[in-house]
Image 1 (cartoon, rainbow, N blue to C red):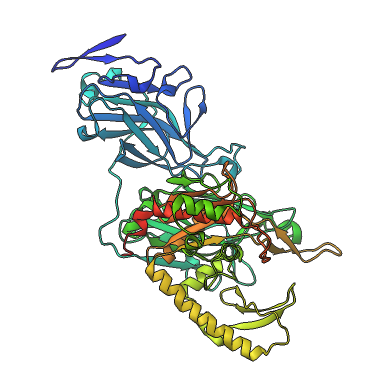
Image 2 (tube, helix red, strand yellow):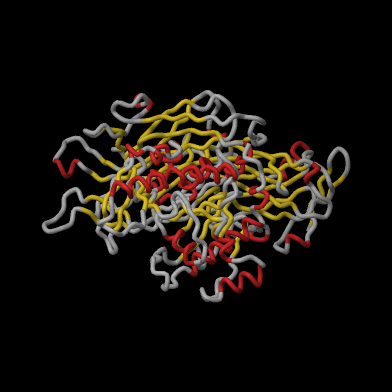
Length: 627
């Protein structure tokens, strides 16, 4: 059936659509996609959607798609999207929406409730005979179970009611045909902002504490302990910072340390909001640094960044000391750093990866997963024409344990590296990089001690960095002064080689987190040890992002971070998350020093698959100049 609409110019037939394959249909001058239970939206939805509900469908995660049939003619079109967002007053009341048509941005906006978002689709994006691919980005999706509101663990983005595409003249000549939504706020989407060409990297650091210069920027919900640390002691806490003076793409880095009590609070759920919109949600069980892109739709340059923290796992400490003042300690906020993204990394601004959802990879490599460890080098040589040792030589380990370095050694690649046989917790690694490892060349800041393990060994450490280096000297009777002189000279040499490699931008820097975290027990039971071990957390992209940006201040460097198998991925698989950032999956981080123990197969597979991505989809980034 068709409806005939008469304009002042000419009659136009407007098809009324029924479910069918979108690719085989023709569009008219009006297409209404109805997301009600009896509507037609299932025909056009492609990815990023939850299940059908009575009158709407939720988008899931950071993006969703629609494929609409070809338009009847190549001409400009108008796109209306009627939707609402998840609102939990007074904390959560905003979100960001970005719209793309056939891969091109056509609008972006900050929304605060039931909305009709109107975007113009230029004629140049309407291709004759080709479907129209719409992509909706909603980086402020939210899991309500992180904010202690219900038990919905879906990462909810937009609650969509209708999508309408029509010719511009219909707004005046046949407005009665368009879906009505009297409770909607009409917003005309603006073109997404870009990164100003030639913008210099800017960095603004705000430190908090009883004596810190920025304590006055703390709002409600904070308290200081006797050591001067800034604790979140309410279910919601607030901070206001100056917004960057120039427009552009920025990330915020949050240095936090959660309250951990075994059996009571082994992790903390922390949701971070900007201007009423969620920008990151985490379940944190370790002190860390989290970098989160700041949607430019949520602030005006030169105005204010209003951050809110929802921390509903705070421990009611007043129950322990009988205080009359309620106190719900959840985490320490040490600092917030605002940093602009260089132009060549501007693509990271739209990438959110936290504990609420993972971004879809750009590319995936999962070759050689079936080959036994003894057959793997030969299979790689036959298929790729490259020796396994040559592939392993392209990597340098950043810790925080020795597993990757041991895998290189067992794979026939015994190369030197500053952190190859070091224990390097990520927050301390960032401190060392910001300091350019100067203390590693200062004998006054290096200590050496005998560690009576099996076998015993001399170990060097720098307290400022929290890093321990293995010396591979196992003779307790050896002359300590001589060993110390040799090892400090070695550290100085490796530091220089490390920065030569960074400046060259030729390596893949691998980092894993496998060591159990020892946490103090505030009130141990009788005969109980004063520490308990928490299972190690997998790295998040939000933790890797500050490391990636720091390494890329020197050359065009790629980071490979390793996590435990998840999301159906098999051990040895590697994903390219964004240009210059890879994620590898391993089933077991344990690897021994015994050369006869063949426990390094997964690590070799990861190295090969990362090398393949580095040569293929990541090659354009690898060859891009650093500045």
